[in-house]
Length: 268
Image (tube, rainbow, N blue to C red):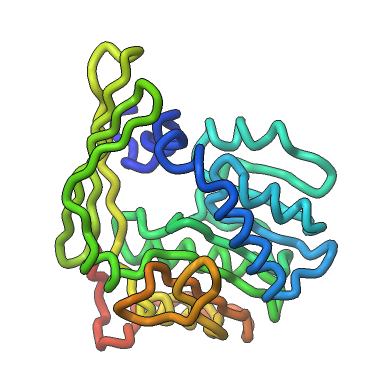
């Protein structure tokens, strides 16, 4: 699709799901069960799964008794997830940067580094605003992101993966503001190999604290892995943030001051 952002094309590709999601189902379920237990997720709680993909996390949450709404920008992912819809599980194609309901959900989840894809900080702020405004006062957001400092130290420049007849050649690199991953795909069913390039912003714990607090969200807890182990800035593979909506929404401002003193957008 000419002019599409990288995530729109890549997330709609069947190779994306084969590479990332057709495995590790047990790990995903164990994480959700542990997280739900820790949060004391109540039966009937209204849950928003932001960037839900094909809905694997949404389905687990629904089985636990939550009333779950999943949103994702990928048409093919939502088309797949919709087959599992029922009275307490619904899916919609939606861009997280745009408003979606208001003061409705008890919890909002953003799993598996499903953030950091947009071109500017303003767009990421818009996504956090969408999530914050969707929550009731006292509502909880959980963001599961890569730990930038760990990822910088453990970047694997090249690797190859094989799933049946499909081969993935993966190259990784970074600059000051982003991680990049180029995925080359060779499949006998393709006339020519395909290539996609991911780009994920280097958002630190401090960056998320800024973005969340600007939308009336206060960080309550932070974890460093899928067992909810403690967060270590250098040793933890994940950055899992739990924040609570503690105020009404702040008025929109043309400019903002970041905790490091910036007033501009570093990701333009």
